[in-house]
Length: 122
Image (tube, rainbow, N blue to C red; front, side, top):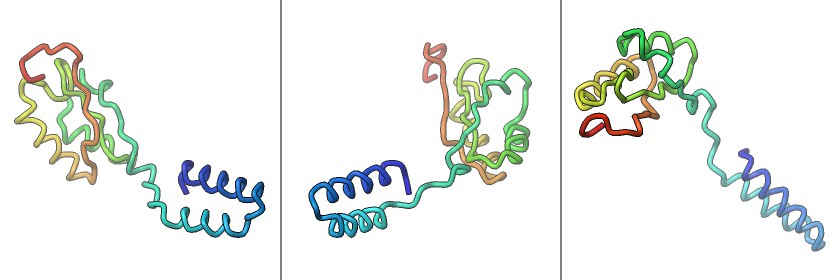
């Protein structure tokens, strides 16, 4: 149960108790909790920021290999000057990066780029 659902169920039950309809509200609250979508597992939500790996010249496959034992969703990829993916080559490089992470069971869920456009399209 997610925090939002827990709070909603608790508030509905408390309101019912104050109003004297605790049984009816409990049934409604249980139905609302059962209808809630299942929570996504933590390991499917966590992404590792790759900024600390930018300066070492690692390939996408090497970074994917390093992240595999962590059992995370994937990288938070840096797409900027000096980043893991150079912005001027992003169109060609992002599919290569996606393939390398996909081979290890991960996907690129997040990307960070520079705030200042250093090159057109960055």
